[in-house]
Every structure is written in C-alpha cells, then in structure tokens.
Image (cartoon, rainbow, N blue to C red; front, top):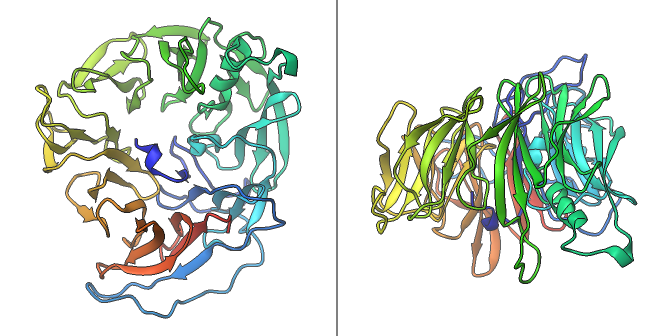
Length: 475
C-alpha cells in the first residue's frame, strides 16, 4: 500500500492461485509451489551487459535461539543450466527480464524487449500455469501486446495496442496520449484463473479511448468487451474466472506540471465472459480506484474516502451491485487484506471521530469488531505475498492471524523485508545514508552481512536457507 517506500517492485509467483504462478514445463513432472516458493524481483535497469553476475548467495543454516549463525557459508554446486521444471526467480536486470534457478544460479535472459517498468504489479503478467508471460512492450509503432513462453524465450506479438502519433501531432493531453497512459501506466493485463485460457487486456486498437479486450489463447481470437468515453484501466478477474472487473478513468484539467495518474473516476463495470454482458456496478467515491480484494467468487471489497480519509469498507455483489458493510469504522489511508484467511489490517488515527483511536488493528473473518495490535498508527500497511505476512511500516511484521509480531532491526530505517519458509528474516536497512543487509536466523541477534547499493532481498523458494541479494548495478 505504500509503494513510494520501496526502491523497486518485489513480486510473488504462485501455482494454482489467482495472483500469478510459476510451475513445471508442460509435460514434465513438477512440484506445486506456494506463496513463499517463488518470487520475482524488479531491479534497476543499467547499461546493457552480455549477462549479469549471478546474484550473491548467502547460505544460512538453522541454529539454536539467541545464537549467531555460523560465520562460514555453505555452498552447493552451481547448476550448469536452468531446472527443466522450474520454479524460477524472475528479475529485471541488464537489458531485460531474466530468470534463474531458485538458488540464483544460471541467469538467463528471457526478454530483451523495451518494456516500460513503472510502478506495476508484474505478478499479473505471468499465467496461472507459469508457462507464459504477457507484456506490453514498446515498438516502432508505439505499444504492442506480446506473450513470451517460459523458459524457452519464444515470443509472439498478439496485437498492436495503440498507434504512435506523428512528432508534429504529439500532444501530452491528446486523446491518444491519455489512452497511452491508461495502457502503459496502469496494470493492463490479467490472466483468467486456473488454466489461463483467456487473457484480459486494455487496448485502443479501435480508438479513441482505451477499452477492455479478451484474447483466447486457444483460438487466437480477440474480442472487444467494452466501448465507452472513459479510459479503461485495471482489469481483474473474479476468482472463478467468470467475470472481469475494470475501472473507467479520465484525465481532466487543470493538469499543472507533469501528467500524473487519472484525476477523475468515471465508474466500475464487470463483464460476464460467457455472454459479454456489461454490468454497471456502484461507483466508488473519490477519484482513485480502491480495490482491496475478493470476499468470494462473486463479491469484491472496496471502500470510499471519508472525513477520516477512508471509511465504509464493504463487499459488493458483482451480479446485482448490492453492498454489504464489512466495517463502518474509519481508517487512516492504509488497509490490506491477507489472501490466506481474508483478514484486514489497517491503521487508525486518534483524531477521527468514527475510528477506534490511535493504533494498528486487525479484523479477522469471524470478527465484527477489530482487535487492536499496536498503540501507534502505521504510516503504511502492506501484505507481503512473497513472505506471507503483513508489514506495518515502520513498526512490525504481523502474521495473518495477528498472533505473531516481529520487530524491525532498526526502527524507521528498515525496508523491503523478506521472510523465508524457515522463518529467517532479512531486511534492507538505510542508516546514515548507507545501505546494508541485516539478517536474523532462528531468533538470533541481527547480523549485518553486506553493505552496498542493495535493491531487493529474496529467500530461495524451495529450501528457504539461501538469501539472494539483488544489487543496484544489476548483479
């Protein structure tokens, strides 16, 4: 929820879950992986290089509580090729998107196309079966939709999304530019859950606005689902794959300086894919889409801005638009939902009359009244899918049931936490304008294991004993 605090995007790949997936190559035996068992890391793009150095591997072994981990690292032989059946670690590096084995070995460039990174959820780009990645890429014509096979690197251009205006006709506030922003600056692709047979995407092939389309990977057919005056953004599938939600936004003056996100929310619609019926849903308040998650196959969760910044957390029936209150307590900007159990974690201010006072609260599925976990409010609430835990910045990590809280190594200076399946903790720490990696193993004291321009931390998804560290120079 507080993406400005993160230097880069950390993404998680899940098998058989709707967020995204990595799995075995079709026809080869593989192992199903859970939320902690595959990740994607986005690191800064630097000047092209033939191949990036292998990410630093720091292997750690479990030790007794309150004792330091062994100073000598244990290494296993480096594989000479990618695992045939995955899973893989994905990251942005030198000249494109790379994949490696779970231990960071054998980095292989998967995509070398020109991709606008932005502040996007790249997890959405990977199919549920883990064998394809859908990308919006820059081309000579402007923007194209491309599907890349994993791990073969084979790519196919599906369609041209929008045409490039001539230099003499370029206008940053023209209809063509607004449609470009909708396609490029928002998450604009979404795979149908389960088998990923259908791909929902945003395009402006038939102009002048961006609309919702559907691509059938089996028949190769493209179907236009909507056609309206606003710009379509943020397609999202219902968990059962029967409906596609999307928002309609608009850029309206005055704009001031640089053109930012859309500043008008026109509405929210769902399309039933079986017959193409477009269902108008209640328009959320404010100018920003507030999609929290799904309650079940036919109910999504949203909220409105209010006198205390945010309020009226509710469930909406996707078929008839009927709203059911979940919580009428106001919260302070930030709220996140755990896909593990549906719990909500939110921050609250003392000054708000309709709030529960200062602090961080959790609302479990079987509760009607939230439980207070912290006396101080958090300045950001985020669910960390790769670690399966909440992060209430700058305070603590919180388990999805609210029963376990983990302190940060240095208060207000710790970012990008990573928790392994073995329970080891790693953080990127900024102190005195210097970055370092701090690790705690089996409850031991915090140890600084590396200094430098660090981007992200990822525990290996299979064993959870090796920490992969991606650096700002692309290594």
